Length: 71
Image 1: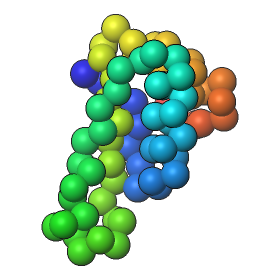
Image 2: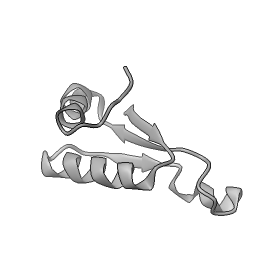
Image 3: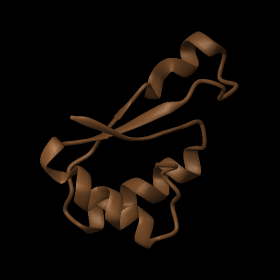
Protein backbone atom coordinates (compact mmCIF):
# COMPACT_ATOMS: atom_id res chain seq x y z
CA UNK A 1 0.00 0.00 0.00
CA UNK A 2 1.15 3.51 -0.83
CA UNK A 3 0.05 6.79 0.69
CA UNK A 4 -2.13 8.79 -1.67
CA UNK A 5 -3.26 11.66 0.59
CA UNK A 6 -2.42 12.92 4.07
CA UNK A 7 -4.87 15.55 5.32
CA UNK A 8 -6.85 16.67 8.33
CA UNK A 9 -9.77 17.73 6.08
CA UNK A 10 -12.52 15.10 6.42
CA UNK A 11 -14.40 16.45 3.39
CA UNK A 12 -11.36 15.93 1.17
CA UNK A 13 -11.05 12.34 2.38
CA UNK A 14 -14.76 11.73 1.71
CA UNK A 15 -14.55 13.23 -1.79
CA UNK A 16 -11.38 11.28 -2.64
CA UNK A 17 -12.80 7.98 -1.43
CA UNK A 18 -15.99 8.54 -3.44
CA UNK A 19 -13.90 9.16 -6.57
CA UNK A 20 -11.77 6.08 -5.97
CA UNK A 21 -14.81 3.93 -5.30
CA UNK A 22 -16.35 5.16 -8.55
CA UNK A 23 -13.26 3.97 -10.40
CA UNK A 24 -13.16 0.59 -8.58
CA UNK A 25 -9.85 1.44 -6.91
CA UNK A 26 -9.38 -0.18 -3.51
CA UNK A 27 -8.46 2.17 -0.67
CA UNK A 28 -7.87 2.06 3.06
CA UNK A 29 -8.03 4.97 5.49
CA UNK A 30 -5.45 5.06 8.29
CA UNK A 31 -5.51 7.11 11.50
CA UNK A 32 -9.32 7.37 11.53
CA UNK A 33 -9.62 6.73 15.27
CA UNK A 34 -6.76 8.99 16.34
CA UNK A 35 -9.34 11.55 17.49
CA UNK A 36 -9.61 9.51 20.70
CA UNK A 37 -6.03 10.51 21.48
CA UNK A 38 -6.28 14.10 20.34
CA UNK A 39 -9.60 14.94 21.97
CA UNK A 40 -11.70 15.12 18.77
CA UNK A 41 -10.33 18.47 17.60
CA UNK A 42 -9.25 17.19 14.17
CA UNK A 43 -5.60 18.19 14.29
CA UNK A 44 -3.97 14.88 13.40
CA UNK A 45 -4.01 14.09 9.68
CA UNK A 46 -5.60 11.00 8.19
CA UNK A 47 -3.90 8.97 5.49
CA UNK A 48 -5.58 7.45 2.48
CA UNK A 49 -3.74 4.40 1.16
CA UNK A 50 -4.09 2.56 -2.16
CA UNK A 51 -2.47 -0.62 -3.49
CA UNK A 52 0.86 -0.08 -5.24
CA UNK A 53 -0.58 -1.24 -8.57
CA UNK A 54 -3.31 1.45 -8.46
CA UNK A 55 -1.25 4.44 -7.29
CA UNK A 56 -0.71 6.00 -10.74
CA UNK A 57 -4.37 5.63 -11.69
CA UNK A 58 -5.56 6.93 -8.30
CA UNK A 59 -3.37 10.02 -8.59
CA UNK A 60 -4.70 10.66 -12.08
CA UNK A 61 -8.33 10.36 -10.93
CA UNK A 62 -7.79 12.84 -8.10
CA UNK A 63 -5.86 15.27 -10.28
CA UNK A 64 -8.56 15.15 -12.97
CA UNK A 65 -11.10 16.13 -10.31
CA UNK A 66 -9.17 19.10 -8.95
CA UNK A 67 -7.46 17.56 -5.94
CA UNK A 68 -3.91 18.90 -5.65
CA UNK A 69 -1.55 16.20 -4.41
CA UNK A 70 1.33 18.62 -4.08
CA UNK A 71 3.84 16.49 -5.97
